[in-house]
Length: 565
Image 1 (tube, rainbow, N blue to C red):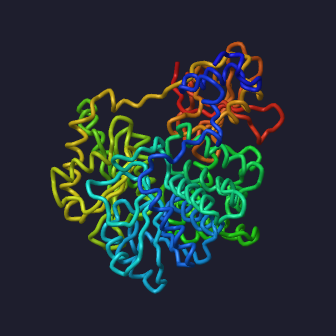
Image 2 (cartoon, rainbow, N blue to C red):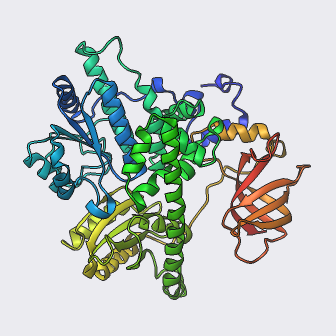
Image 3 (tube, rainbow, N blue to C red):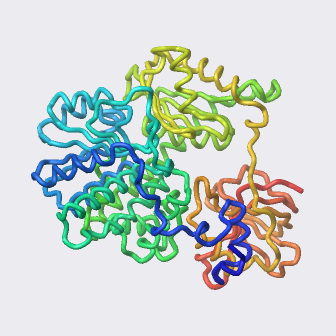
């Protein structure tokens, strides 16, 4: 498509950035719902909609079982709301408690849910690895529909239907759907079936009302933002910006101190998602799902405030665990890196006092700081001999495949595992921790080279002097959604540091001068204060954003990396 076909509101800077991400025309840069991939080729979709349609027609009880992260919570709320919109009169929901039941549909959770006597159990964002739990449900005479997006193992569970675009042989092109996206597609297909059977008035309910939940779950789960997911997320963000989101999400936006009118994907990733996730990490995700299902704004605000308080506690617990992990690893790292940096291709961290709900965040932070695959472990409950681990990885190291390779090489070492290329979970007996650590280090050392272990930042180049303004900052902000696989624009350049001060104990506020730019530029470098002043002239990698705090034409540089020139 020629350049003239670009809308006039897309400046040349943004067109260049889109092109660098493989989007060479407006439709590719800003995909719409009209261009959503059809569900053609999605295995078991017809069987799944048949189960749901039959349950609705006969007034049977449907039990939706969620998961204890933001994707699982939004998928659960989406399923409950969507099934009710499509005529289901008896829909219930449940979610495992991390500390009591462990991950997913376990036999213990099935036993606890048995008094509810569901006819059809629907898993969302899990189930592909829950063989024992599904067997337990089937033994009670329940039908089971699995909706999931996690990579399957060699053997599938004995469910009545399994909808997962990552199944071997599945022909659906959108492999990057989050769990909430998979369930949204099931609802779309169910509506089409009911419509074809003449069981809906007109075209049926507007399922687009649920896209706020799809957007939050997709971004919070770090699902790659391919064109299909960008269309879903952009539509959900439009609902949130128009204050048309569900009462619970609007309350979470409020307690997070975000402006709904200018909400972006990063606000979901750094503000809304963590508040939902905190419930599942430290307490019970049932609270988060209740918030998402609540239609009373006053009650939703009360629930959101409780989630906000839990999130503050989560941050304190996380920082304490991170400090302990870094202290424990410091001597080990110094020894390894003193041998030329080749002695530690991966990190395993464990403390008997850590909380299992926060080890994933600790692993993520350590991975960011050390640029190594990290597995962090904690007892599944205080004093337990069973450990739960969360793994986070770097580009070039598929951590779920790594666990599969270790499991094949050392049968019985890992009790269970599952996940993706960049994140995975596992459990093992505490007596096997040392053996696992050796096996994980050996595998990482065999597949990672020095180049892969070198952290890099991909820049969109330098900004021209005239591009340091509010018009371009707003165009960049609104040009998303940006995220995993479609990264937010990052620029680099040299600046004079005219002034600086520490804010909030850990952050650096910078006053910058740029060649060719008359006005001084305000910048913030989060978490950068280490006790030493910044250099007088520095090379920065930064994002250009509107400064809504100062308002007017104010802009700000958010610094991702700083080094002396």
